[in-house]
Image 1 (cartoon, helix red, strand yellow):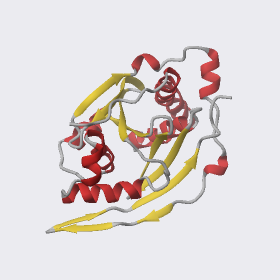
Image 2 (cartoon, rainbow, N blue to C red):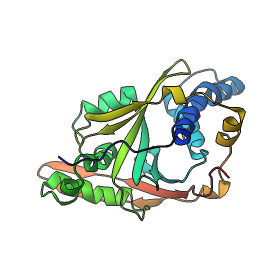
Image 3 (cartoon, helix red, strand yellow):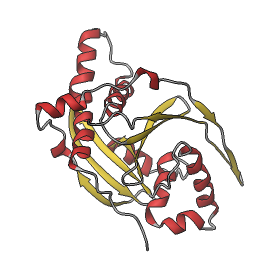
Image 4 (tube, rainbow, N blue to C red):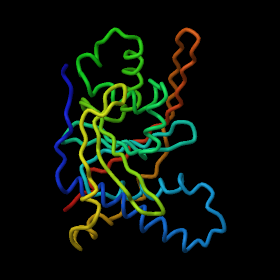
Length: 240
């Protein structure tokens, strides 16, 4: 069976992703909590994602960033023009819960359907694959290139401490085909790295969303997706 492999990310790319994640979890968020002096910790797991996403958007890279919204939840998809792949992040605990359910039209299943066999994913007569392909076109509408596949960055933390981070290549059923541990890349290797990774993005990026609402029905199942897409050009936010 033809399938894609883990992309050849550079050492700098791996370091910028892992370090940004660690910095958000272990420094940015705890500093915010300490300064805010909040009396309760309601919503902290969700709140952390705002700091993670901000750090990742500040990474100097050639990534094209899609900001999507499904229901009330906002998340980012990163497209690497050098590998023609998309990337997203998820906690290990969330991934285990999601994998235990049958959700063929979740964005992760949709994007990973192409990993196993590009030809099959594009032209298979299976009705689920056809709908996944249609959804994929909507999700990746802001990308003009052909996207070869999707990789997931899995991580876990406890008490504001990053415990693990790895990137995985998943099958259409979300079985792990390949993986690489990135924990060793999570600490700064030099003062220059800290300075580069800490650069901010333009406030001009904060424009409005575009709302797309595809609806599909199959037998007794109602499959609805309310996807809001924002394309953030991050091509100029890279190492000089």
